[in-house]
Length: 203
Image (cartoon, rainbow, N blue to C red):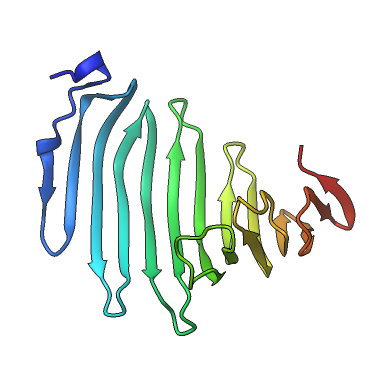
């Protein structure tokens, strides 16, 4: 049945299946159209509460397709509402393969840790929020080129109300035999960064 304005058709929400212990599965029919985009395959979602008040959510893609683009793999969010320092903390792990209709693939695998280091005491006030991001990941592009990225000095990201750009932090990027260093500065909010010591700016 199509929804009002024919934005949705062939998507039967009653096909959400609760397996057990916080596990849910949705089987998309090939005829599913949601706001002009087609979906098919399976999507598994697993929710696990944690003793510290946090929770873990894992999303697994089983030959899941969106507009004929195939997704396989999983993403896991491990969320602590308060870590030992009393900060919001999120660990994201991902292992994904995206395949285009022409067979070309891109692969991403890694983990990122995000910690809210300022603004935890004022959850309704966004302007004082400051986050630090650490982690590493590997990416194989559609061109087959492999890149390895490691955050060697935590990225510092302020609330977008205060600054739209990372204010500090350093990345190490390996591509074949090449190694490059990207540095986001000393904490100043600007659109500048350095690549191997040469200054650049965001457009």
